[in-house]
Image (cartoon, rainbow, N blue to C red; front, top):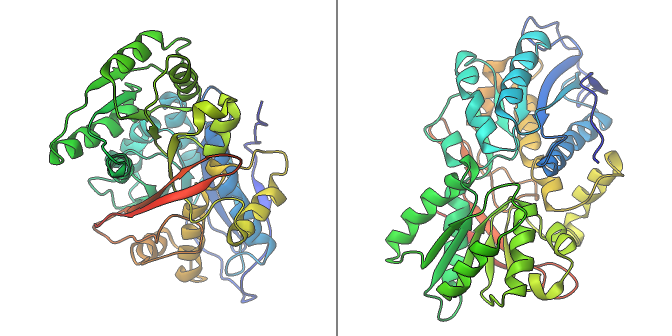
Length: 391
């Protein structure tokens, strides 16, 4: 089981500049501290979502270890929401009203982020950065104080289908998906995009979260004889499907979302034959073993040496880096309004971590519109395609 982080503040140290900072009346800001609230599933069946939270927290810790921001240290207030909408609402209210945070950075499950949007609307001055939830409905239409620093389900599903159709003689496309908010946030744009290509699924089946058998779904998919299967599943259910597909002789490649790590899936399934044709949307710039990515791996391992190092470990870092950049640009006289303004000015922000540059404007808060596809052919991961998507 993953360790549950304390909800007490994590005091992280010092300053990017040694200038004397005036005392501020802004909520969550003092002369030498900035309070940032975070939440994610530290426990429960979706606790894999704790990894992006740890990655984001590692960025904050590292920034402070190298001087902090404009004379202030960061205090983190971390809540466990277990991807339960009711817990997420309670956690968000606590961070805002009780902990008096300057801003909030959190949310792994799309349904939970959608659940707190009314609370964010009631606090329009509060900057909010999504941690890892992907539903396009989170940032479309734009909410002025909500920023989305990962590829949304629109970008993910377009990339998945474009990649699937790039395979020679691919015409028959099947889908297996969860029916929850997260699943439907992928299914709806996927079906719309398929229509523009003049194709329909040859079979579409639901596999609910928590399922222990996928026999009926596997038999339907096998009978449909697909050329490719698009899987919109979390790790436990994708494992169930991949093992079953190998057992029942479904030879079609599987293309899936950024909700899983390729490294984790290979380990979970434990059968190279079942994962050799698994292709995963990849949100990062390079494979984890690439020399140019070592900076981020070393940072994560320094602050979370006992946690798994996999793709999801780095998904929360981009948002954290964007927050740090906006706070730095806002200057010593820090206000929420200034941070929101600076985030809206962020253009082609690329620290060398994510799949493509991050851009926010007042009209567009879905900041990443590109992605890669990755697979594990033998003994290591390989990036096989990159898909920039026009705004």
